[in-house]
Length: 405
Ligand code: GDD
Ligand code: MN
Image (cartoon, rainbow, N blue to C red; front, side, top):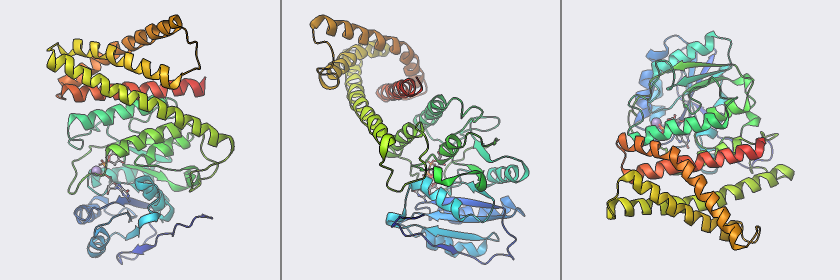
């Protein structure tokens, strides 16, 4: 692309495999510090893919010796292995950027994206590859949430399972039409026909590249293949709280029209620029008030439950009264200051309405809180999770109403 000062990373051949029949499918494997996983993966791919015309393309953003390790083990693999290594400023877009960089270099007509840590079993990836090559579709999604698919032992702990399930439901609620019939839009295992995808319409962010593909290509023909998410083979996950926040930003951004062309600087022109700024400011204000409310609510719950000794749902109900009053005071003084009628009666009416709404929402939150507690999550953690879920749902739905209305 023009105008970018970012150096284009080199694509190196790591082995000299059997006379290369033109690969029809490129396995795009993003790696960041996967020195333990890469040899295991290389060993597992060849038997799984057998005679399928595939090549392997690592897109590496590592600081460790993953590239050298891959180069050392590639000659033992009969599949062609290549690697793009990105350094520093060229590591644009994180995992999603790496996936697109790989798709741009794919020699196959299909790009199949899979993780390096064997959480996506090579046999499952091979089934996906056969589906892609044998059917008239544009995107094949590996799903953990339909048919025989499952999160298996891949998502350790109830918190991660809750986050995964919750964010999937949230995402489907945000794009009810485009994601109809897609059970796992957050999957990291998927394949797409490169000719069916307009990469210039994508400005990926973070981990959720499949989601962006689906949302930006509503006409694409999609098939699903079930798989069981496996535990990590070695090394550590790169998912983080920061990644989670990035995901929310990504969601909010995806709900706006696609950029005419991807701009490396994030775009800054005309009306869309102003609109984004408004949304960002709104999200920030909403976020800060919401965040402080979550802290106040959880502190109050701790007080009512652990200090006073009240039953936890009763404690949660009282805590909601405290945090609602807190949030109301903040909104009145900071956000709506001067903008609304200032007489005491009007403030009182608004306050009662605000409290009533929050108690209505509490009716939905209490069962969720109980369910989380039942699945073994500590009360205060469960409280925060249920509040975050409510908070995000509120933001997305008010945003949805504003933009669709
Ligand atoms: N090139 C590159 N750059 N690769 C990255 C980066 C990056 O910034 N961050 C992570 N990766 C690679 C990892 O090395 C690994 O091969 C793969 O991307 C997935 O990263 P993990 O750290 O193992 O992520 P995860 O297991 O928590 O998340 C997986 O499951 C999610 C669904 O639960 C991924 O498949 C996600 O895409 C998926 O949404
Ligand atoms: Mn993983």
